[in-house]
Image (tube, rainbow, N blue to C red; front, side, top):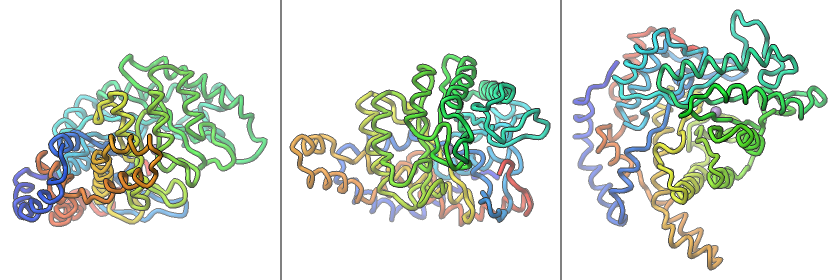
Length: 424
Ligand SMILES: [Mn+2]
């Protein structure tokens, strides 16, 4: 299914008057509105291929319908999102779930939807059919060098697939760790992981980045070999200039000050980018901004400040991606909501009066500092984000149009009720 431009124009015409009123109201107080709109238009958030189907929990999975059953259909789904919001111009693939049979054809298909290939993701957290050694007790950390070798070879294969598609980064997330005290030697696990990562790093093309993702716990429950940003940064620093720390919002212990982590990683030039999601308890993988929208804003506040200080291009300097799972909602509608929440937080962060905030900080004026941040956060920027979509040729109300067009019903008609996305 493809959404024609004329359908979007027709939808926008119907909403134009109401939108204009809201946009005029909110933008009349913003001096640099055109600059903000341009930044919003350029800011793209990659969609992971594994978020296009229904996710499950360890207790069960309630299948959706009309899920993308092939890489081609996954690209089609992200193409639908991008047509609706012009903000999801990249897809992030997972190997071996998304191995392209013909890279050139897949590349051409993505281009026809205006999509690029974001970071490639390797998978050593589950065993694949025909694999010689098991990852039950870890992969890059494993006590058996044969297992480590196999995991390294897999990552090198992922880089090769990425090169063929025009990707520029490899994300490594490891399930490695232990579930019981005494199960492994922490130092040896770390050293093995470092040595394995060094071998992978050696195979990165010159213009590629290696993103080292961390996670506090799960699937292992006692220790995780790359558990937090300190351990990831330690690895990234030892590996070299092309290695960075990737922050996934759900991968922290409760109440972690993620905005402070972001600020310091940016200061050190070691922030790879983001996996956006939201959570109440742990790695809940809920829709971005669904539980803690103020935290999302505070993170963007640090991102904008830190990127501007270092002269980093907001749109291209870091990797922006959603990493979520949908047990209840239609995955496509959920992803539209996530992208909208991310752009709202970004727009609010762009509204922060940084000169005034600096002054308040210098004067220890705590009340004023809070006022400045909350002035931006409490501004209803939805019409600004909508205007940026309008200027890019997207829909004023992406979810409204998704609903009106009965997209899922059409996908079910094309793919069938029982089409299941691979890899979940
Ligand atoms: Mn992640």
